[in-house]
Length: 147
Image 1 (cartoon, rainbow, N blue to C red):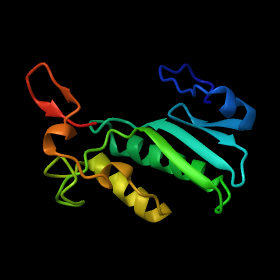
Image 2 (image 1 turned 135 degrees about the vertical axis):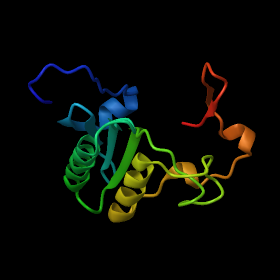
Image 3 (image 1 turned 60 degrees about the vertical axis):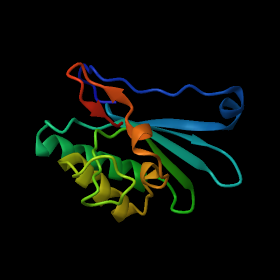
Image 4 (image 1 turned 180 degrees about the horizontal axis):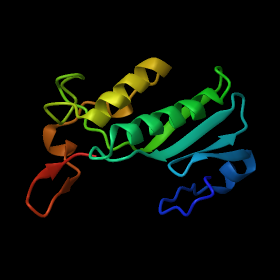
């Protein structure tokens, strides 16, 4: 990780089986790390948290450049999973009817572009749920949100 003092944190909890399959972990920034596992095909899991939608364009672009560096570090035939808080709203305007939001925000567009460029599937858009099941928390002002 960077040598500067950081307020952010990343980590993994590994089951005993995962510990036996563990190969290595790598930090790509204070927002992105990965852990790799052995198997018939190696599996790499990256965890991350992107800047919020009110962050500068430069911060968001730097985050996605670092995430690209992470993804490019893995052999193309291996399994790669990205999990984390990507601070993205994906809307029906750019996705499909499985989206909760009416429109995609800036971070959502970055996520869509990244997924398309690297061939990732956004899991939350693959599973059709009732609208009432898409809301995951309610803000103090009563507004419903989906994570």
